[in-house]
Image 1 (cartoon, rainbow, N blue to C red):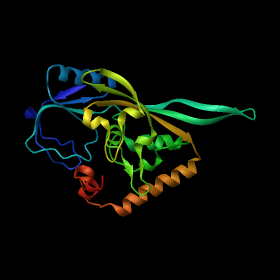
Image 2 (image 1 turned 90 degrees about the vertical axis):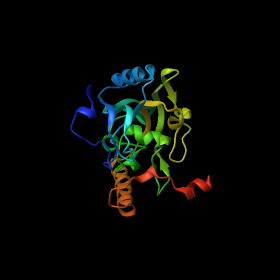
Image 3 (image 1 turned 30 degrees about the horizontal axis):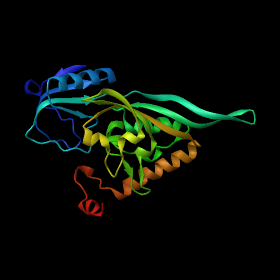
Image 4 (image 1 turned 30 degrees about the vertical axis):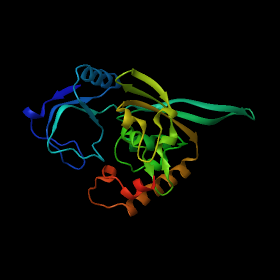
Amino acid sequence: IYTLSLHDALPICLTAFRTGGSVSCLLTVDTSEMLIKVVSLAWKHDVEVRIIGSGTNILVSEDGFDGVVIKNNCRKFDLQGMKGKFMNQQVKLTQAYLYAESGAIMNQVVRFVIDQGFGGIEFALGLPGTVGGAVCVNANFPKENIRIGRAVYAAKILTKDQGVIDVDNNYFRFGEDSSRLLSDRAVLISVLFALYPEEKKKLWERAEQAVAYRTTTQPKMLMTGMTFRNMRSEERR
């Protein structure tokens, strides 16, 4: 971990939109253990905290922030286990579980999963940002209305009242561009995705189709994306 006070350093920008004022303190964390310690310490002393991943899909005020901003570089991910059944003297895999820290880059995670021959999040290829951001807003592939929340099996979160707790999919109350993480202001530490075996060729085809769809339907210039609510969508709820 290293610390950097923006008041005493050269200006840097950590948001994709390249906007925002200065902050009192910027911390970069590389492990889940350190993320938990830093956030818990800030909460203990009533210091406001904001956590960012890749800095995409956010707008930061030019007025700055009088608190601690944490850059989440906790990027570990790997397969944690598999399920299967014995058929015709062979083991047939039925499910796999992928562990991913909240700061893991979504594109890297998706490519790894496809290369291992498992499906469930291949539609997320091409999404900017981190696993934490995708889960927090229940990232969507609009063409098929497939959301990342359906693949979340369990997670580890940090809350002010209970500390670190393990939760299952039901905790999140996934909705349209939302999850309970937003209302509870809880911190996502890591996620366990439930995946299924699939032919790599089919997975890459679906993933590349998702990328092509986004490329042809979304603007090429720098955009804030879901930062602004679709009011028509709000009215339909």
